[in-house]
Image (cartoon, rainbow, N blue to C red; front, top):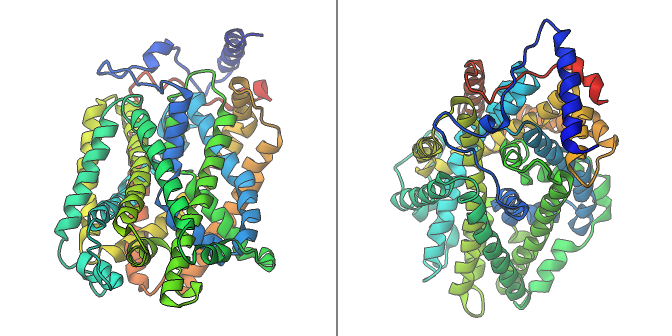
Length: 545
């Protein structure tokens, strides 16, 4: 039976159930009204599936792919880590990504509206995801992109000098002694971060096809070419293959360590932009007939392969640095900002030729990877606000970017690195994992995983099997619950880093709770727009089994 007739049959059956129910109401609305705001603007859509893929890949590929994956792989078994890594992708990352694509596409809506249609009491989760990402992760993420932009300029004359750690921590950041001592604002960081917010505003100010889609069609090829140049260049450096040997040498005994498997699941979950509300928003801009499963496979595997390839850049440079300093590789390898802004500048200074060019390409790659992710974060909350309040996209984007810049200011101070570390840990270890866990439970037990699977299979050429239901209802939430519990116990018993529990609670936990409160408040505001059609009717689930 053709798709339109099948839908017509479902609608007839659906309303026959509704007539027997005294608890739910539905409103019939013309489909074209769902795509138009109260200001008369069209909601927009991707102009092609390629545009969607590039935007989704751009969101997934970020700074962590370059500076986090290779280190995680190195300390968790080298080449052997790929076994738990791709196991985690198939059993948690890919199922959750398909789930988010399915929700967004089925409801043709951003996260809050999609979850409100599942059940009115689950709407708060749809708000919480983009809220804590936009007003938490995005605040400091944009500052880091600003650092990358600064270091693009510094690369022209290798301004960091011989002592790269002193340059980054003291001269550039003006690092203070503790989180409570913010020190002063750093003018160079304010300027660069402000410019990054302007670029983000300019891209998201446009409709999805003329803004993010077009930007990612430019960004992604540039990032690919730059990365391949860095890989090829890195492999020619003295000591490069020694570094890569450390990166890939398998330590099979590590596979018996539960911590390695948890690290693999954690890396997969953090790298695919799951739990952000981004992929739900992006999927809502897709046409009715879309191969959601194939898109999810392409995005997830492209992201993971890019992470793997980036490791060759990192460890070829570290191998060269190790040789030049006559130190073992484990004494030069680092992760996160220290790797990017201390170790890499030192390694670039020790390159045998064209050091400035290599530095420009490397930090430009970081900037592009960061920007392609940051625009998606703004889009997730922008689409949510437009869906509920039916206001102009340009107004929403402008207000979010101005607010974002002001919120970023605390991370542009001398104590900003401490705040970044604490907030990043809490939002990633608790916010993202809890969001993913609740997504699985709400979809698995309220909407019913089988209902969403039926929709995905209806519009996709690649079909899901019932095993996907079991992953969403049991396997994936169990893994996420274990990760959440382990993080909580470790932080409770050992603390986080060298921070006091007062700093951890007052900065990190209060930040997370503030976004929860904001999500609940926004969910209590009544829907007055035609885009809110009907609540999910549990009695209709039997029609789709």
